[in-house]
Image (tube, rainbow, N blue to C red; front, side, top):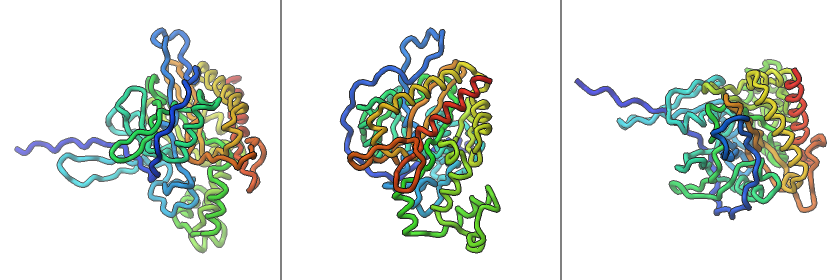
Amino acid sequence: PRAPPAPVIPQLTVTAEEPDVPPASPGPPEPEGGWLPAVGSSHLQQPRRLSTSSLSSTGSSSLPEDSEDDLLSDSESRSRGNVQLEASEDVGQKSHWQKIRTMVNLPVMSPFKKRYAWVQLAGHTGSFKAAGTTGLILKRSSEPERYCLARLMADALRGCVPAFHGVVERDGESYLQLQDLLDGFDGPCVLDCKMGVRTYLEEELTKARERPKLRKDMYKKMLAVDPEAPTEEEHAQRAVTKPRYMQWREGISSSTTLGFRIEGIKKADGSCSTDFKTTRSREQVIRVFEEFVQGDAEVLRRYLNRLQQIRDTLEVSEFFRRHEVIGSSLLFVHDHCHRAGVWLIDFGKTTPLPDGQTLDHRRPWEEGNREDGYLLGLDNLIGILASLAER
């Protein structure tokens, strides 16, 4: 009898087209802080620090990566909230793709792929590889993120962002060598919170207006959420422009009202959700975090303390004052042992300001002032978690 076919091993594939960059110069030693071990955990006497951009989205206006946050991209083949699993077969058959929306329980796969299966659900469409070294992970390099990480290693924010160990070459491509954020957590729960009142650069908006293109796919997305959202003209065209879609999407979420929005959550059991497009009010956000921490008061306390520490550091950071921070996230990670931490990730759309210009990060955004609302969002986030802690 014929032997049964070899089992198909699912492989998480996340891709992006980004330019290679030269190696970064090493920064100064990383300060203490950033990962909060559980009280009474004797096996954590020497806690390992964790990285963040191991889970980063590096969408940038300079990249052809197709993200909903990139106003100039023309195709939506990789829409946010999808996981793509490539099944590689040894028998030479052509690979096939499975797409799973919103709630995902991933099949059996390697520990690395299972650990990072939530990445694309949260919109992190960079390419990741195992580094082959414990505590490190590789992410396909982009010039904007490499620039930011290299400078952050010498800034007050160093302890709030991933440790960056330069650029390495693998299979003819350049990768950022980063500290593994999830290293040290046992069955981590992860929440991605996109910061700021907008997720697109001003120049993207300007260029998209100069080259308007009607998008039927975005019209369908808008229609699926709110059939009354399109105008009569858009209904007649059965299409919308990308700037119109982007600004509408920001408006239905908490981005414009609270200065942040929840992008995705992965629970300890591996299930993932990105069904937060219309999570807009404070009470809705409180309920999401309440479900996320599952009544763990210690984890909530650690999250709140860490956010306050991050805010204090941002307010004295020279890097933060002189950069427009767009599309960046705060990543929340905790486990059943009460370990918890929060880090800044995603710097592909973080851009330096002209010489002499600084941002307040709390002032309302008006086109031309480049304000991003990052601290406005962080203030609201801290207030929401403080309210939850008092319940």
